[in-house]
Length: 614
Image (cartoon, rainbow, N blue to C red):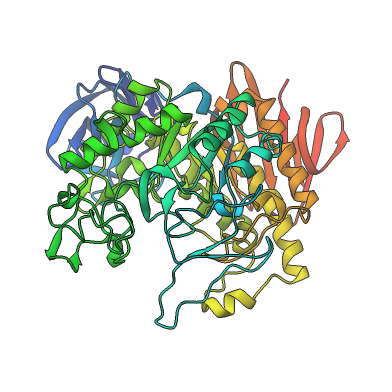
């Protein structure tokens, strides 16, 4: 018999998940009577190791073959804690650690517990929202592009549906300087389409004046790229979004700039006053030169992306604290928040300053971070990140959910890893963050979801340009995407559509995942499915805001409940080859499901449903 303790169950730890300072927490541990335990202590350590608190547990009762010990405690300071148990017996004692969802003597991991600020709030409008991500150059073009002031060299495709330029220069350099002309006016004209998907948040990849089509090589933080339009065009786009209940968030790229920029000006395109061309430049201290001017710190050794000294006072003033800072500039024009690119590379102090400032300007501004792992315990460059224990990130890009969903849908997991991933994130993230999490299946940094679901090919760019899904592969991917998106929309968080995924776009990673939206050639079955999912969330608060609890995870079946204000929804998916018999209820959403008796439903293979209990 194993000692029982599962921090994800209220029977062992109440409340579930994170704590706030002074909040009481009760823990129970069930020890087989034959162990003859005479005492139990819970030892909570700070994230860096020192003991923070020792909690004695007292014997409460015997239940069957188990003796139950109970302890209560609270934490005085915010921070990340880890804990284990020490059990004393008549003959000695031993430590108890975590081994998956079970316990293990003298070996394993410690349990994690975060204490977050009591005043940590996330915007109500983001909780349980639905996000649509637009890569601006490739979404929609309206009218002619203004090429005046565009950083050179560049090419503009003659037609919208041409292939992206994937070939490097003869020197082997990938310039990413081919444009299709998508612009603010194009997004504005398609705002009804965006709204038809149930969108409440529009996320735009970078829009500032830049050399490349991806615009992560910022040229001028405060000026929109002329190909996208003017500030007034941006304002009108935001107004069109707000009129439809849609908020707008922008990409904040603050770990580096472009070498071809106002601030660095390696090419001399900005008048020769940048740090590279002028040793007395006001931006000189933003960068670290090893041997001036040709050797300098750069982002991941790309010399076109010189890295900035994030805590340099003049940079902080320019981006965050100064009059008409970058964040103030865009928020006052109509933006509602930011997604921080490579947030792991930004100092904790920088993120905290930015969060404080955007909330001063706009009290319900949203701050999303690009984190590819569990953000609650992330360490980057030897520094523990304080995203939640300092209450700075409202949301994260939820790649762990994506990995779990893909592995399950592709048959690499029988469902148990989905439960483990979802409940670990639910436990480790503050609830106000969990319901704002950016639940994605595809982004500008991943292969298109249709391709990812059936083809893991990773050859050369030339091979990828020529390779497309066969008809059989496409139908398989389409069927799988119906299931994957259903999970995406029914799990806690904010489902995020990467433009065109809902229309059946395919492609490998950059640049093939950044092709133009296929206007007039959409997969209407997929598109209508996404619209139904949008309505499903809009009409059911339990899917947007409810608690989650699994009742089935394994045998290729997944079942969980979402509960909110007395409403209980059962969400089920069947990836097995056998029918799944379920108790009946009010069928809200279903695919391949049949009623066989008043009290029973049959969920067929590859079927999924949402049922409301009476």
